[in-house]
Every structure is written in structure tokens, then in C-alpha cells.
Length: 100
Image (cartoon, rainbow, N blue to C red; front, side, top):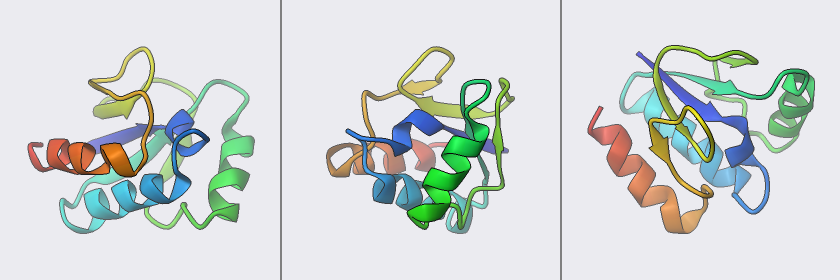
């Protein structure tokens, strides 16, 4: 099963470290394939951003199109919507991943 994290959850006011922690948890403890989705033309931008901050360790791919899977994000098409991914929302997101 794919867990899709919308790339906008890695940029401020969200925490890129919580983004990495979420992908780590889903990959290691839930054995999910974690991918990141972004708007068209932003793939390189997000790749460099995530790589610079050490958040690409558990991300399988960055895609620019809609993908089947459980989508966590702050925008359209998300199965689980949150306004940002930071320390205040991290436990809620981990709890939701546990329900998958």
C-alpha cells in the first residue's frame, strides 16, 4: 500500500523533521511504501529541499500526478487533511497511520 504525503507538508509552517519522522514511521513500523506528491514542475525543487534537510531517507519517489493510496495532506485530494505537519499534529498523523 502507498502512503502519499503531499510535499507541501514539508515546508513552513510545517516541520520538515516531522515530515521525515512520519515517513520513517510508516516505512519502518507499518511497512508502507511512502511517496511524496507535488504540483507539476515542482519535483526538482522538493527533491533538493528534502535532500538538503535529510528527509528523503524513507521516500520512495516524488510524483507530480495523483497516485492511488492513502493521501495525507493539506489540500485537495487528501484522505486525511491537516493544515500543517508539526509537533502538534504528529501524534494525530501517526495514530491515523496505525489505523491503516
